[in-house]
Length: 309
Image (cartoon, rainbow, N blue to C red; front, side):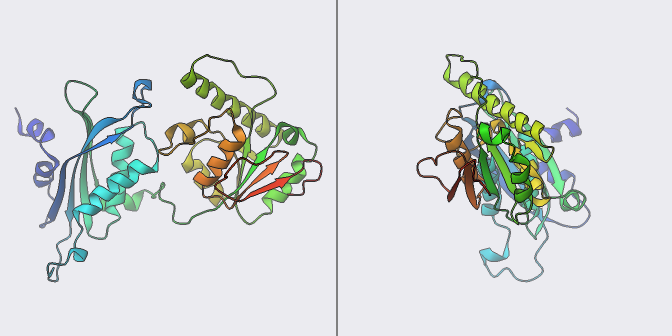
């Protein structure tokens, strides 16, 4: 076996040693850190957890001053495991590659970190370990924005529109008033007047009902060009920072949520309330609807005929 092939399957610590840049760098490592997590792009990987192993090596700048046996003066192992836990808690992911990128990015935000090797392997998907390994350095952060760690927290105004509100002649005026608000705006909708197909199967019915909500979101988008259908947190963050009115398409965020809604898409008002809490919204405005029980954010109610937002 050639040296290159042997190193490809070595632990990240050996790879770090073989590709060390000029000058000495200290390293810390976390080996065979195994977590039960739901991850994967295949349908068979949804709704179940599987064992995932993490091996991480971080090259750090040597300290010039005495450490004095003070844990606060070093990049500790906890920072590595906390990066793993934080990214696993952020949202459900399909790809190990995405998870590895985000863990590396979070680690490299630490002042001492220079370069990191992240290897992630699924232990239950085959006869062996199936995984990816990436290498990233602080130089990579300088050429790429840190997209999934927003530097400011937005508290959007979430508005739920019933079908009569969507078709109302007042829709354009309401959107004018929403555009003038200081906080960003996200619109939620319910099902259309046409019943969605019935599958007779709980999981598939959930998917069908989520898609039915998205169809109605596109109906609203067709009523006014300012209403832009959005289905990812990254797009929502961008829209909130740039004054765009978004219409929430729920499938991805609901299905990928680590702590998903207790209610299903058959109760779209309760789902909108969960979403408002998930987004840390300032409030939820219901136009032409009654509030759900125990909403996570303050709820405002407006009658369609008299709504002035």
